[in-house]
Length: 151
Image (cartoon, rainbow, N blue to C red):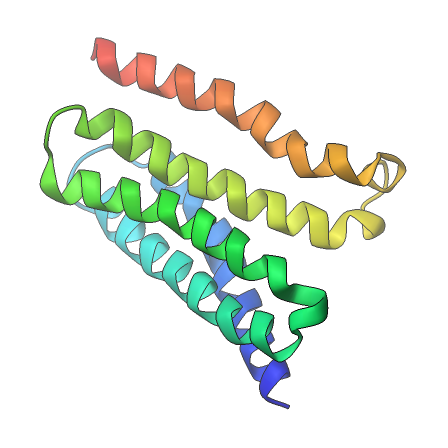
């Protein structure tokens, strides 16, 4: 019963975060939509991380690794959120890396959990499914950083 409640919270926060991420990514980079959605996204990532704690503990034998992944994933979102709030040296690079890194982590979780139900993806080795978002996302992070460094 408790597991199901935390799982629903975890899934809802993840789905909403995955949905809002592109809105913030493509919104004009100024106060307003980008910052509002970015704040919500950060707190959704926090919710995903916190809800992973009981999910891991309640089924430790099967889900222990979720706790490590959740902390690692949230650390990216925190890095990006904190960089934008404090605007110290290289803050924009840290913000981009953190926020997009956390989005890669959430995409990875979505694909790994659902790979068996996604045509084409279900044919790939499981280990490759774990790395596809990073393989695709890391060059995108570099491109975005270069774009904003020039402007």
